Length: 211
Length: 211
DNA sequence: AGTTGTGAACCGATTCACAGCG
DNA sequence: CGCTGTGAATCGGTTCACAACT
Image (cartoon, rainbow over all chains, first blue to last red; front, side, top):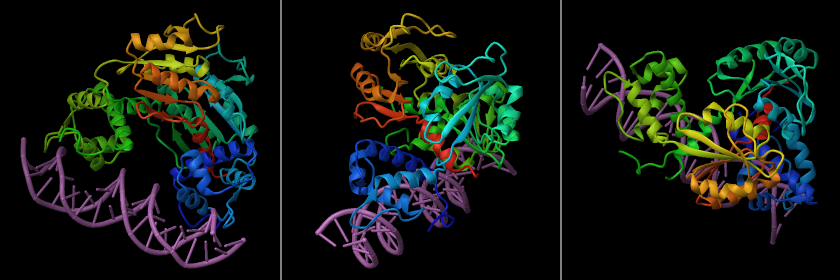
């Protein structure tokens, strides 16, 4: 069963990403084969859930043996569409935007940050410290997104500008947007939005904190 | 029913935080009373869910009328334990750590970042740009956490050091930790851990992105 | 009349347990 | 024999729909 039968939940996809990371660790350790059981024990996961998550997408294991680390890693990367480089732009070149631009996780394993944008002329014309990613004026965003076929955008601006930046990114043609501004964005159907709301995370942590 | 009957889910608590933000907007607009119905429509929520979420904690509304914006805001803030200032330390004074230290959301509404820590002597001894939060050597962390009764910690270091920082923060006595390092941390029961895994978020976004 | 607070129904996701296969 | 893949059972969270109340 290769894809279109079941609607895949976000929880399942998050776990695929976790599995991918586990497999990378196993590979670095020289492992070649792993069972769902072993993997579950090693990384505090549930073996039935691993098997079920994978089964949504196909059959990747060998009964009586387990999974080939190498192969499963490649398969999951393909499922997550990380097999070919996805280009990313970030809007907002404050500390957060610069941190994200230089973040290893956004510049490896299928992602590449091609530019940062800002309205402040004091920030533009430079490049980030670590990876020397260019910081450009927002006016150039649309053209660059089209020219470089950028598919992902990150919003790292103040909440007041987040909606406007969302529209601009959507118009330019990105397919997915990660929003770090602590505000609710009015969505368009054509662009997938995912919010990383730090304030909500912090407040939830506060709740579960016992005196 | 004030608290101990039902185990509250993280999803419910996340929504409390959302409700709080909505109420702040309503208050700024001068609203004094709101029904779950109106609030749901205004902010794309579900009215039954609002009522049920609140009902886990008590009865806050008036039948036939709705909720007092002011009162409900105060009640939710209390539930989230934001009624008195919670102090926060951040470990890792890279761009991410500095962005978080100066983030408005971590310096208002019940939170206050008291210090950033780093091992790099080139970074310590200074302060952040916007809020002038002091950057100190990690050796001073334990003492400061104890002295200032810091209850929350944020890990903004490289994944290799995350586990060690977790232990240090736990030993110093913080009650909750937000982890930004893209790695699985081995937890202690005494400290609540919440991970904000940017790589996983990005990969999940990639999955749901249609070519 | 209008809205809350809530038991019941529903729905999706997780876990169990085993048949099927290597 | 061991492990995968999966239907069935279970669990938890969301939504419905209405009785209770102002």
